Image (cartoon, rainbow, N blue to C red; front, side, top):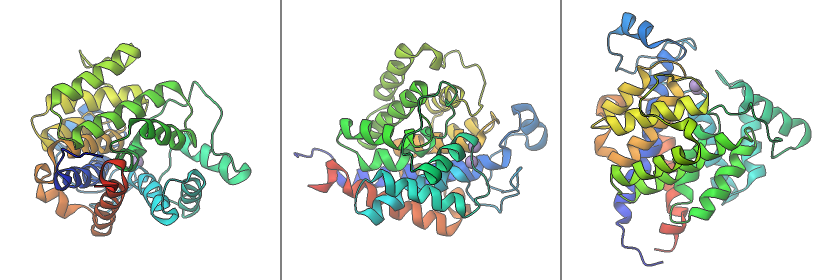
Length: 301
Ligand code: MN
Ligand code: MN
């Protein structure tokens, strides 16, 4: 493949995407399930990684979002490439390790794999939570340079737990925007991709922003897009997102992933990098390198 991109720049953005994702999770977890006004009353503007929240986390700890995304990356590393059974096995091992939390739909899907070996749950109109979209970081990195591969891997991993057209559309759109951001495209290009999703599924329309930030993937995406396009830098986008409350760790993680890919490592505030759990930081950075260097774009360059 003829490569007009700078591999160093791409790797930097890939690392920032996975690190930004974990930082968004760690930051947002403190205010998960709070309303925007409860957050404002307690913190003013909430902007530091301090732990706590309903999960009583240590400062810098991450939750299921980062852990499940890492499961995918570990499966790729251990299998030496994409393997759906290997991913499902990682999810199962993770669930058995008694994680601090796990979404209902994810739990149901993983249990169905553990009981019956199911790698794809049946289509379900109610499975439109953000649990599949929140696992897109390793998928987007691994498939950089090949849209068809992105589509295949994104939906395969999603359907282990979520088989729903709205969730699918969100996963694909996020994946594509991540690809574009990692290749250094501008916000207007990313905005066209977001608008395409809205044209196909008008329910995702985020302008005017309704202010809903629940775990319903439509609310999640609206919140992330609103703050990603409105924010002038990584911090502004992420702070805006988590201060909406609701599923703040997951909206934060997804916004952090997108903004990370867009602004690169230098855009992520150092105080947040330092606060993130050291082992998690090390693993996400290592996995980001591993995933993106295996991607069609970089593997042969
Ligand atoms: Mn979580
Ligand atoms: Mn969450």
